[in-house]
Length: 401
Image 1 (cartoon, helix red, strand yellow):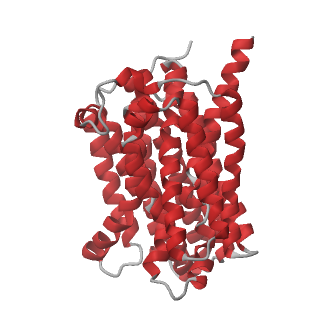
Image 2 (cartoon, rainbow, N blue to C red; image 1 turned 135 degrees about the vertical axis):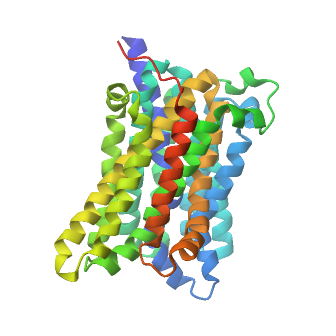
């Protein structure tokens, strides 16, 4: 009985880290407009970097996670990452210089780069393959819930003053306490004694999941970077209504993640196609309002809501599926091999999405309002081909007895 209780505490501690990782950029997104006005004399690109700067440092830190894991044990890595997360995140509350703010955001990226491989890799380390689908689904669900809570809370705090939004990072203190109390102190890097910061053979071994995560994030981030602008032009939806639809997407992804273990075992073969197919259906639904007349406002809104539900399902299935397959292939060493690569691919996809999608939109579809969605559909087709080509013979976890 005692062993079961310890297992639940360890699981809760790991999941608490999953709750925090998505907040690196999402937490202060609601306050970005207010920050842009506050730093009106600064280059607009610097204001945008407030959101994207953590992603760059997360990628770099992930690629050096293996040597870090050889020097430090898991509790030291988690504690260092979480304390830096709180100090760099909430510390921005006291900053009024945009360059200092960007340095703090870079430190936040380093902290998430230390936390994120542990938030998924430790699930593979402590639990057998037959339990990993359920646990990766829970991890993804906590990630989505972190996004919902952070977005709503930061938006509320930003109404006081722009810098109050950064206080949301104080949530990391809860995870610090849980790590001190319950996280076992393991030496993850000891099994990879000859490891170097980045091994090309690891990328070759795990490329189906790594490339899949890159494509998935590039496709998904078409939604947050374009949805609010396009929806407001397609319909008469208010800013508050658009925000609720966006939050609703995260809620859908949360519930899909909660039940991912059941989905994985019920649809063992076709589940690998769910993410690209639901993304495709979602972006196709977003095209419908442009084809409808102004008189069909309710139908346009219905298609927009339906598309958001589809994209929420795609994101809710895609991330835990890729993590599950990769963790089974990586085994107990996943935290120091494949999970840092997946984390790097996830944030690289977020960073590259607007840089690739927007030029393609202008080149292929000109001034078409829904051009980003059409590029999203093309990327979905590429994703489908990648899934079929790389996972046709991919092994799946055994069914739970």
